[in-house]
Amino acid sequence: MEHMMKHMEKVCDTSVSEADLANHSAWKGQFTEEHFDQVQKAQEPYSYLLGKEDQGLTIAWKNEEGSISKAVFELVEEKEEAKQVWFFQNRKPHYRENIDELIPLMLHCDKEKCRPLA
Figure 1 (cartoon, rainbow, N blue to C red):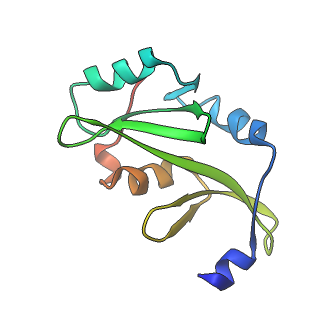
Figure 2: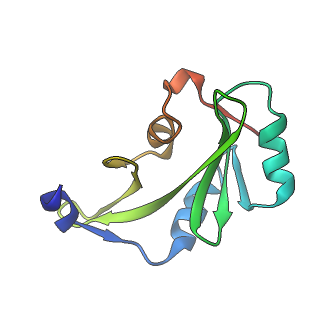
């Protein structure tokens, strides 16, 4: 893990990630209470929204128990290949080039169960 982290650097300009996320069907920009209400009212578990809070870029989803869960994620620079990748850390770090590949890891479910809320 230390070797992998040596080659990663946080991208300081979060507008880069926001611009990338702006076209995602689940992107809401700055989260509001109405957005969390929308997640809570979702019928299916693993329904989610992407947005921004004070802590950074955030995903909010309805978990299997019917409660709202949240996780913070980042866009980081991979130095060896000079490309940007999405990063999320739970028990171990996860890096993916595509945000849709990272979402199932954040929600702890199969990709087929992830449901973006428009």
